[in-house]
Image (cartoon, rainbow, N blue to C red; front, side, top):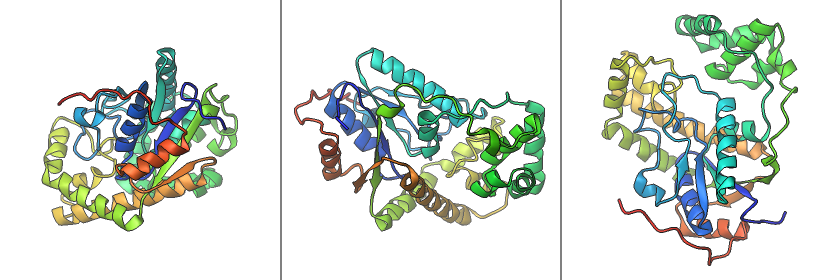
Length: 324
């Protein structure tokens, strides 16, 4: 495929803590006329901050960033919602004559953008509330067992504790009488730009990645993660929201409910994030056409390898840095 800076839409993906922000910003600055669109399902939420790895103004280095910190934490925001918002941002950026760069590790978001979902039924808030109560009373695994009875195909593809996707599958079934696995093939047509998205995935050494994850989790707890969650809960945010259900937050909620010690919350968070990183890598290995980048995104050698693979000249205009 011919790489043309004005036409290619770049996507930088990979596991958590692999340096996606750094290499995404480096790519944008090398291009000189690029803007970044967040593709991380946690960074979209307002008010949660410490465990999200949202880039600071200094880390953005003058590169415009979009779809960060813009969804209220109590909102159940979906991959389809993000795909719609991202498509609109891509069109806006290209109208300005700039290059969109998607940066983040949520592969499900990228797939939703490239291969749109079927048009499902509108949300039934009463049904959603009933499913939420069942989860609170009997656990997410109980809902997965219900799904096994009505849609074995979907149940086989979903983790028993993946409440968001399991509950959505149940909503579709109870609202329409059809299994979501039967109607999902009726997808919308991909957007015009879908074939122009080139995905580069970071693949750092696993032992070093896990070390970074452990160190970062420890740092989050040391810099006020528990206090952040306490404040959010005191302001009425429920533990069952997508925001507080994210890795890095749900074990803190369990600690605050008295279900585990602080030490246990820290160690389980480390394990959760390591498991999440492993799932991210498995996801991208199943995606067709990705280009792998060995190493961490904050390594200069990895960045230069990206520029080489993307065939981006070294004399592109550099964007001036913003002084913090």
